Length: 344
Ligand code: ADP
Ligand code: MG
Image 1: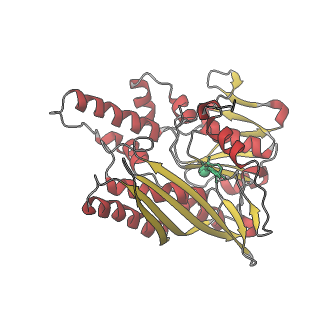
Image 2: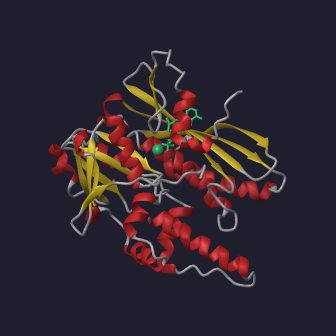
Image 3: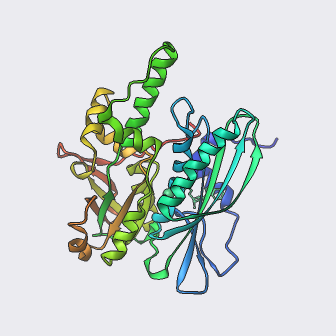
């Protein structure tokens, strides 16, 4: 009898591994294939191309109960540009493919594209193609982003060495808490459709983090300006813990993360406590912040120390030392990754 394996038993990364294991790169220009934030392609010149694709699915990645179409269009581009930034490259082109049901009007789709256009302007990228088709239910957006960087500046997940410093851009946990706030408002509205959603102005950064995240192209520029090439880098789409594990696995190293140095906004801390959540758990496992996690050689410490919006939060250690969290209470325990599972 043929075996039937449920996809849930493998998880997202197990499934990707299983499906793609039989493939081998045959083109010498395919410098790096599956397994990083973007593939790296040799163009023959001193610059390489990087290419990445991400798909957003209604009901899985966004909910129209609280997602404005314009923000959604912006976000679909930003999350792809974020993967280009994670390679320390500059984004240049995107393609956008959509599958939609007849529930969407032309005007609604124009809103979506106004957001896509705003992101193209913000990140200086050109929309150069795509595909349009129907779906039986809901909206699916798939964006491919293409970027470019000098070969010597491209940063993979695999270059971290013991002794390197672990750095984080921006603040973590905000997107997860923004999502919890929106979900709570949705439940209140569903229970009592007459109510108006209550979006407190002091939480605006939390709402923005989930609805309209920014890719850190500014960091790619800052690295170039300060002559820094991170040793490894990844964007934080699934939560800090899971991304740090990706870097450790790809680089064959361990890590020690300082809880006290993980950047979390004060309003995110307050909101976490209101939801009875531990703020650090929101940062470690929340996901969707689209900040950058990177490592640098300690000789670059002086270059990085006074740069704005970059936080040093730990150190890379030998593999045998494991991947640990040093808590504010002084304990050291294994870091746990409970990244979002869209199969769960
Ligand atoms: P990211 O979170 O940076 O977008 P993912 O975790 O989605 O990256 O994907 C990890 C790697 O697996 C990437 O190199 C991606 O291109 C590749 N990948 C994901 N899904 C597939 C697929 N269905 N077929 C081939 N490669 C895939
Ligand atoms: Mg990524």
